[in-house]
Amino acid sequence: MTQVTMTLQKVLYIEDDPDIREIAALALVDVGHLTLKACESGKQALQEVDDFGPELVLLDVMMPDMDGPETLMALREQGSITSKTAVAFITAKIHPGELARYRELGVTDVIAKPFDPMTLADDLRRIWLRFNE
Image 1: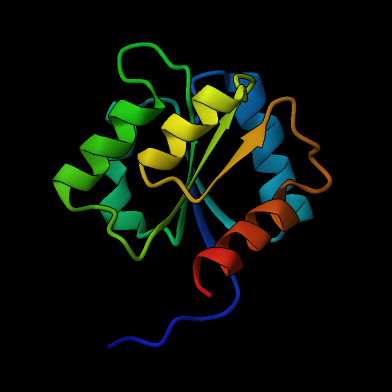
Image 2 (image 1 turned 90 degrees about the vertical axis):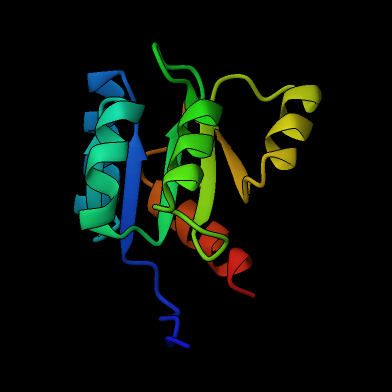
């Protein structure tokens, strides 16, 4: 059994909007000092996830071709993320019915858009710590 570090370090972020991806990258790398792999699509994430080995996957829910839930299922089917990988969705759709559906998919938490770039890294650290309790 491998030892889990108690500090989140590696985040895979899947977001189709380049402007939001750039803001999140600044928030997570420059402000949060995390190692980030940002992908513009679920397809790209499926190709690059194994080489990166994220501790937490942050997925946009609404994306063309493969949405967040479809990408999550494909990552699991591929074996790239397991029950030991924290997963959070990031979305503007945070209605109670949607939240319940996301939880049924095994998502650790949901972050609302628009997010605060100054606190995004800390939000992810809290999600990751709660996941690893």
